[in-house]
Amino acid sequence: LQCAATLGMAAVPVLELRGAIPFGLAFGLPPGLVFGLAVVGNMLPMPFILFYLRAVFRWLRRRPWWGKKIDWLENRAHLKGRMVRKYRVLGLVILVAIPLPGTGAWTGALVATIFRLPIRRALLSILAGVLIAGGIVTAVSGDRFETIEGNASGASGIIPNGGGVCKKSYYNSQ
Image (cartoon, one colour):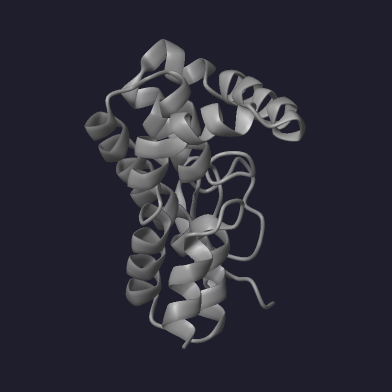
């Protein structure tokens, strides 16, 4: 049940894997399993979005209430897609990979559709971005995370002029 919930949550817009990974880890599922479920769940709707979004938008535009909403979505995609317009496939990977609100696979698919990127390239770019975002979110969602800090010491005291570069571990629960 927790696996299905993690997979399903990853397929939902806004939450995507950014919400599914912490959710699955909170249930005590292994990080590798959570990562895999979140990536698969996040990618499940992408082919359908890339193939059918234009037709759905055309159909909805004929409805008075939906026309303005579709225009708003397309304007938002143009704003989010500045990097995609400039760098094309690499820009799409970066847009999807940044684990912040307003980015992700759903936004990437919308932008790829608006800019008419070839579907195969768009899918591969979105997958690459989802894998990167999933790695980032998985790495920072556990109870412990590690940083590499420059000009800091490994000890708890302060060393004048720093003590070099070292790897430190922190716990979210403390």
